[in-house]
Image 1 (cartoon, rainbow, N blue to C red):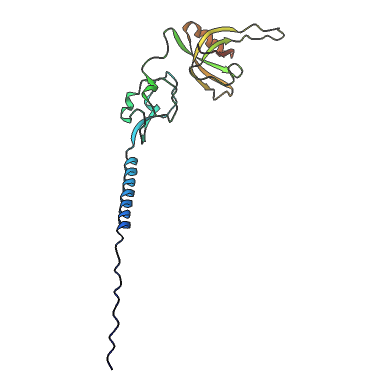
Image 2: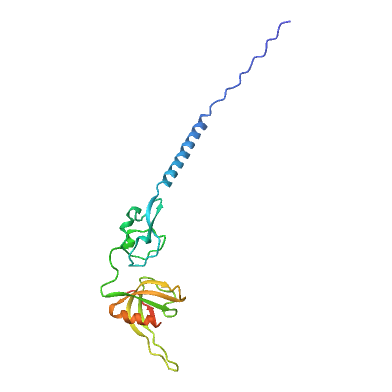
Length: 211
């Protein structure tokens, strides 16, 4: 009996390289790496700028203790931290609040008090100033309220002490709720009368429209 030849072996196909997927994977790896590289470089490009740490009223001289620096990223318009000392001794051109990134337009070397004018402090009780309060830059008329004797009829009209004064600063009195502490810019000659009215609790202010 003749021998039966063994069946021919069928060669298994070799695994083909998936060149398309390999190329796509390489592109993704490169893209992800570039993205992380950009984020890392952006995070590391922070620059120190000047920041306000204490409130400074308009016209007040800025001291070193009012300022610090903070690192920020991005295109920020602010005074560079290296130039902090150049701001010390200048005056606030606007009211500065803690946390404000300081810009050159916010400071000035000019004295905001015109010639012939002075600053005077005035304590004004509730009901003797506008209910919504006052802010620096507001224009006001300063009055002295008359006293009213017991049994008297209609009290006399208030006396106008200053036709036009400018609010330099305004704060709430922490010791007397309902009382506002104002710094007003008034003519030199009117300052004593305004201070006297404040001392007796007779000062009142009326906000007038800006001209």
